[in-house]
Image 1 (tube, one colour):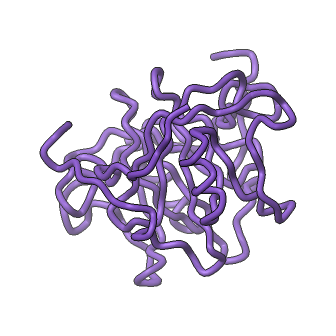
Image 2 (tube, rainbow over the protein chains, first blue to last red; image 1 turned 120 degrees about the vertical axis):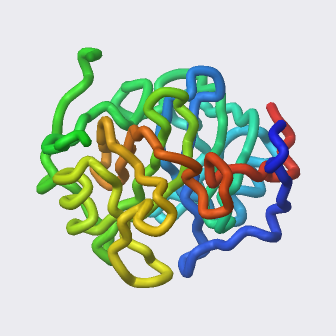
Length: 117
Length: 117
């Protein structure tokens, strides 16, 4: 625990105009970024209560228990919040591939055109 | 390079209704998630051209060259895109603390209330 580490309660979060927060999902051991999901207050509450990730599906407009269909649940080890209190970072142990394509991470494509500095 | 790795061009990205994409910024060496920023097409184009992160400030409504004020630029090593082509992952080498508070990462506060599974 470094000296800047503090804690914050769910009531202090700043949900956006649609009542959502983006949640970066990172593998708790490897550090790989697996996906970015969205949470409303209910999804966050259920995630904290159960220790498994619940998300808000913007495309389907419904609460979504990640893994309910695929069996690939995300077991949450830690939840961190950024300086603006409007973005979550979940450190998780995944049961299997995080991406619906079967890839371990949703970020399996590299963007072309970078002139690295 | 694993067998699922593919590439994608900037023209294939799905910007949201406000013309923005969230961009997860991750340290290219340590794997620490540093911040989540937002990019419009111009911010992305300048980022790719210069190899330094440009973002769209939603609060100020303007293009923002990360580090222009603080001196803490983000040197982009790789850009990845998720399965839905609506979220970016930037792997960077930061010149200094990524957070305006002086913390190395914007995610320096832990959320209370997790019942880890």
